[in-house]
Length: 144
Image (tube, rainbow, N blue to C red; front, side):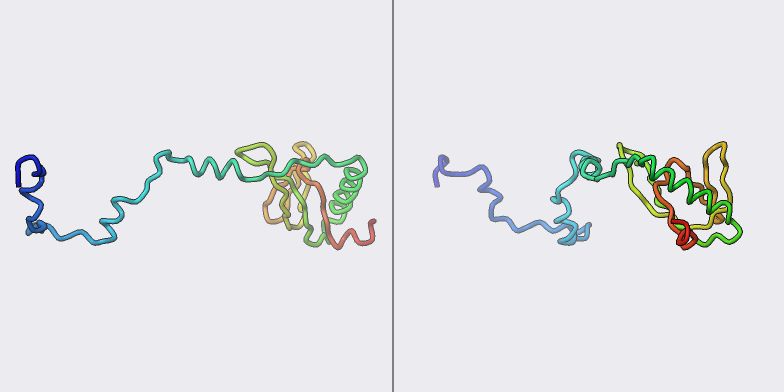
């Protein structure tokens, strides 16, 4: 072979694979993990997921709906000693973006703090009157 056709690695190309006598060989899984993709932009996928998450807009109640809701709450408070479990549909604002979601809260009315407009349930749950969009209970079967 002439010097023109020799590669700079010809002197080592046929040597046996080196195996360390001091270190244990790495497992195939650990070797593969070295080449696994990594997240170059930390938090990027979380930001994309957050942007894709859908929230609901708060619905404005009509005067008729507000009046009906007010009657139901007044009736429930006047019958607090016999009030069964009630289901409140409430709007919960999202902490990260505009909008929120509607959830149902089940409980028994304990009292209403008129000054702060907070409804207290027996289990300690507090609900802002401004967040309630509907309330249902067997107590209202004869009301409407």
